[in-house]
Every structure is written in structure tokens, then in C-alpha cells.
Image: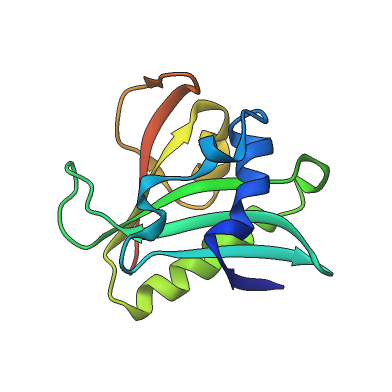
Length: 143
């Protein structure tokens, strides 16, 4: 089941998966309080196994109408089961209802294949996010 969740509900997975247990404070994004943002969680029973955050932000290379995906994380014990893909598909349906034109993200190089399977395209050269690793900017049009 996919549900809207709070910022606090995202932090454990963000910390474990995206920040290598560097601490919850390193897992809070400055954009978590932005107007129009929302967090989604994929649940197995009462356990959150995948999370993602979405908020209105245009990508310079694309233009108006963008929503950014950030903080996508799936519990390693549950990865490969399609739960992250379910979250993205759910979010895209939600974004259609607010007339978003596209979704974009900074994808870890290791996750590019995951996003490509969902119809995202690479729109940048590889770049380094300090302390985290290599990334590509990716986007997907929402029709």
C-alpha cells in the first residue's frame, strides 16, 4: 500500500540507504518544508519499505512545470520487488492532477538503470555530489 507520509517518516530510510547511517540530521533536506511538496511511503503491513519526496521545482535545462524527486530510498531487504517503481508511478499520477509537465531528479549513477526502466532520460553528463558520489540529472515528461 502507498500512503502520504510525513517528513519524519522518511528519515530512517533516508539515513540508512542514502546517508550510510551518518545521522538523521544529515537526512533532512532544506526543501522538506517547501509548499507543494509531498512524501510517499510504500508499506508492507505497518513497515515502510520505500520512500520518496516530490516538490515543485523547475529544472533549468527543461523549463516551467517541473517537480523534483528527491530522497528515493528502498530498504535493502525489500529492493528488487518493484516497490520504488510503484512509488514513482503513483507520484506521476498525482502530478498529472496538478498539471505538472515533467518530473526530474539527480540520480545516483548506480540507479540510472532503474529510472530508465520507468521512462526517465539522462539529461546531463555525470557529476559528483560531494560526500555522496556520482550522479546524473534525469527527467521524464508527464503527459
